[in-house]
Image (tube, rainbow, N blue to C red; front, top):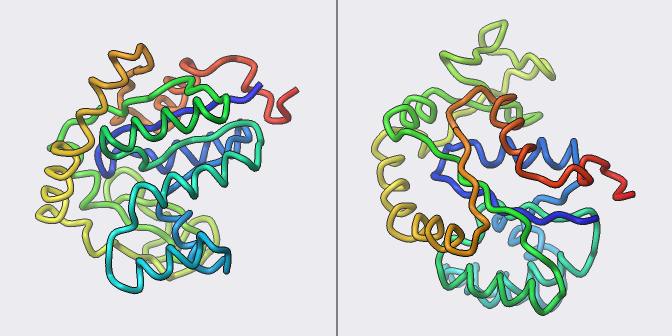
Length: 223
């Protein structure tokens, strides 16, 4: 049995962290728009050439192209998919729904990772990552055991995103509330939405998400 879910939430809500756990624990494939565009650009395929041309002109990639990339990924099969960072708008949600209908696939759940804006600012401005292995840390809640050294791989290449500051986050939050938050009502009306506490400890968030998913998806082999 396959399972397909959408993770919704503002920037910094922890969507990427929970998506990686689902990939590891349940064998699902994470469909991140940014990753797909970067992979397509270097693929040499016809779709990849279209992506490269648009990006080289400094233009935004159209919804049509993104849906085309998702269609290619869905055709690869597997245990299911996590849509991370897509859809972002109501138009994209409609397009994704149509694509799933065309391919005979079902959207099993939409998980809304709820957060408090002020707490989110504290979370984002304090986080940093290892540039070598990608492990995520935080000044207050998850510092490295040895200052300046990654606990996992021992690298000293610890980085902060340039836009992980209060002013940039407020801009990103405004964009989210204007364009993406309407999806909460959209999927609620479809009976797909389940809210979880996105500010809980990571394992607690994972358990909340797990409770939403069919038990059969616990077997990553799909048997």
